Length: 194
Image (cartoon, rainbow, N blue to C red):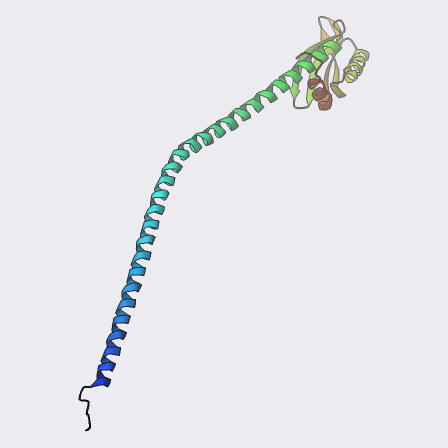
């Protein structure tokens, strides 16, 4: 006898295969969604922890900014004080130079033959006006001044005859060139009292 299989085996196998493929596709899709969900949750946690650490660092930075601003203010104050100290040192040096120059002039001026009227210092020049007994005393005075370590050159500006208390005397003007290297050397001499 002939058996006829009326069941659609091929179609059933095809359906079973299609169903298995659909189930496999859905399962792999669900697995992929689960993996993506886990990665998304992990990244979210990482982002939130990074945001928390950024907030903490910004808070720390804000507390350090106050300290940095104080340091900047102190640096500015220090610079201002350094500038003031430098000005004071320059003034002190200039005043000491003036004192030394006046001392050198006073030491070189003979009391009985030369009388000074004015002494002016302008930068590295000192101008003197005065009265002397005669031209010889003026020349000796110029030689005495240039022998001083503070003056490198003495230039006679004018010498004229003038009457003082009924006597004929010589009025004169001198310009002295200050030797800055000698003044600075004297200033830096540690053995001398200041």
